[in-house]
Image (cartoon, rainbow over all chains, first blue to last red; front, side, top):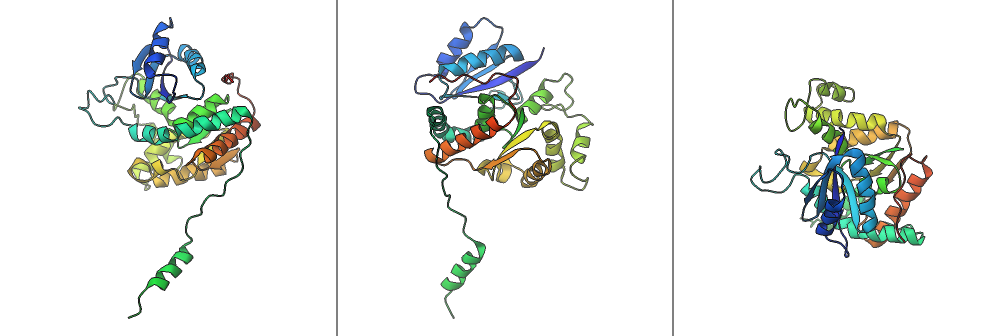
Length: 142
Length: 155
C-alpha cells in the first residue's frame, strides 16, 4: 500500500482546523487525521487522500493550502512529545511561508477575477562601488 | 508535467503547482519514501550504502559530505524535472537552515538542464503577491498539461 501524508494549512476566515478535521472524520475512507494549531495532518492511501484533498480544498480555495509531508503524525523521530518539546522540525519553514499566505490568497483571488498585475520595480541592492564611495566620503581626514 | 520547485520544501510553490494541475517535485516526497521504506538502516532516514553514490554523481569526494548527502536526496528530483520554478535567494535557505553550496549547485544544474525555468522573488506585499501568482499561473499554463485534473476553484 502506497501511503501518503498531507499537511493542510488553514489560513481562512471561514474555517477552523477543527471544521476540516470533522469533515475528514465524516468521510468514510480509512485515514488517520490529526488536528493541529495550524491545520490538519492526514495520512492514508495515496488515491484516497488525494481525492479527499480535492474536496477539502473546495471548502475555501483561497484559504486552504496543502503540501505533502515526509513524516507521518506522531513519528517518534519528529513528534515533540517524544523529543521533550521544542519547536517542530520544519516549524521555521512553515512560519516563513505562513507570513505570505494572506498575500497569496489575494493573489489567487485577483487571478480568478482576471486582473493582470503591473510589473513592479524592486529596490536594487546597493552597488558595492557606490558603497565604497560612501565609506570613503564619510572617512574623517586625520 | 513534473515541476521542480526551489525551495524544495516550499508550501506555497508546492500548493500552487498542484493547484494549477501539475505535479510538484518536492523534497517531502523523497523524505517520505525514505521514512516509509521497510528496513530502516539508520533512522529517521533509511540511508543505504547506495545513497552516497548518487551524491557522487554531482560532487567529488573531497566536497563536504553535507553537499553530497543533500545531492543524494536531490538526485531523483533533478532527474525527473521537466520544468522548474525557482525563488531567487529565499531568506530561509540562508544560514544554518540551508546549505549555500548545495543551493548554488542545484541552481547551476537546473540552468544546465535546458528545461523551462521560471525565476522570481518571494512577495513582500499584496501587489507583489498578485504578480507572483500571475507569473506562476502563466508559466504553468504554457507547459503541457498534466493528466491529473486541476482543482476547480469556486467563483
